[in-house]
Image 1 (cartoon, helix red, strand yellow):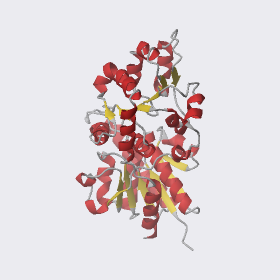
Image 2: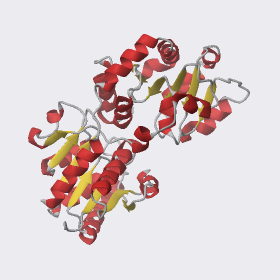
Image 3: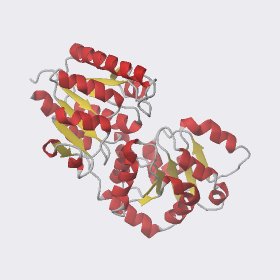
Image 4: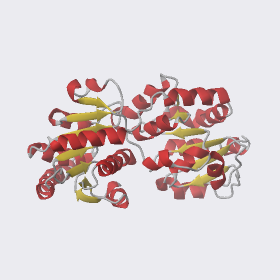
Length: 369
């Protein structure tokens, strides 16, 4: 009988880090039901709610990002919190005694995996993007294994440690049994009409929202149905701006809980280019227009989007061009069956299935060593 397996998983800040982390935890549990898994996150960030909701314990660190430019006086407090977080992370690891630590990116993983390295606990990194994040680049030299979703990552990491696994995605997306027609009707729409889903990630995307608000007449007269996830952050402001508007073919919601059904309903998706979302589009064969966020580290969303657009697996619209061109392009594309078919076929070719299981097996292997 194997001895009890104890795993630390750290990272977060956005859904793009949290969904893969939870998927890896679920896959480890499926292979080793006896496994004890503890998450380490950043206090006040999304993971502190999402991880317990997924059924796992989490400890929070007072870690946060540095302000730009770095000479700002406020960074003294940030540096102090970082040192405190490293000390707390070591304390958590000594108490929990994991055989392996997994980092998925985000502030907390720099402290937690740094502590694991100093205590001689083997570490595995999971890098979601085509352009490696700062945290993972710093942790790479001590990591035993680095699981990536894109080819060509030896630009950032030692080649002998890299394993191409893809990004784990939310399992319920692949398991949804609802049909296209049922999914459409759940939004109060007509299954015989084309449907576009506009989504800006869990927090919403100002540019995508503005692109809609500036073209309400175009939507109204398009003959196309639109499901629009505004993001909770923008929902009150948008509700105010839509007062008095009557657009029956536009369904507005701040957050879509059942994304599996939403993807089933959509003939075309308009989205930011986060790595997690892109992995979902690949696995589901979703035709998509990508509008990369310009507000992310090293502009990695543009690099993610171009990795697809250069293979004719997605359409790409620059953030600055979106308010003028995005809605017209979405309406033209969703009405072009040949284009939808070729986008779907090409994006499916880029899918890397079973990522969570492959990574979970590596985690267990490292723990045994």
